[in-house]
Length: 178
Image (cartoon, rainbow, N blue to C red; front, top):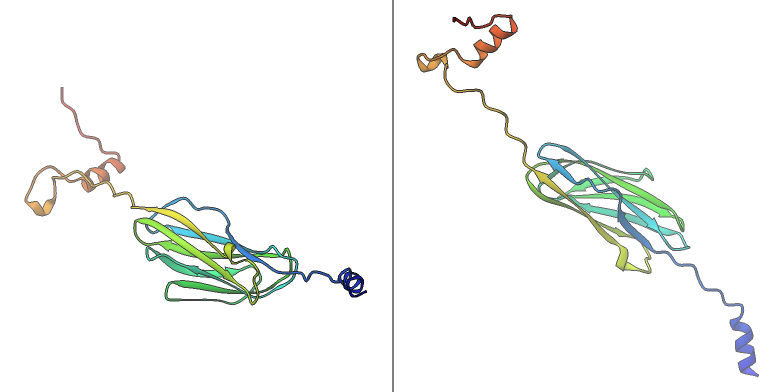
């Protein structure tokens, strides 16, 4: 019968393997100061069984950070422009992964959100294609000001701290009477 033939034919149908690329943060940098070098990394993985082709990872660099460089462990080409670093990961076999690393410099205080998005020619699950890393950029500690007074250009006063420092280095100590 037709039903028996359909059941027999269905037994030899194999589900096609699918791919699913995802991106995850790789280490969280925490808190940095203005001017500090920052390294931010994202892992892109193919959690499916089939190879994912034309895998591309984009990372939006926040306005309070300056992009210095971008690289990917697969050796793919990385470019940058308009606040986005883009790396061509290439093909990822089922279960394979790659890491994109961003080198940046913290430029101003506030929260710096690095937002990543991965894409592939075919991706069966878009819900895991974005991720972000937030780091706090604090202000740089202010230098300690030397004591006031004794500025030779101010017309007098006690000797300034540069003179006192020089005398101390040379071994001269103030004389104490009494």
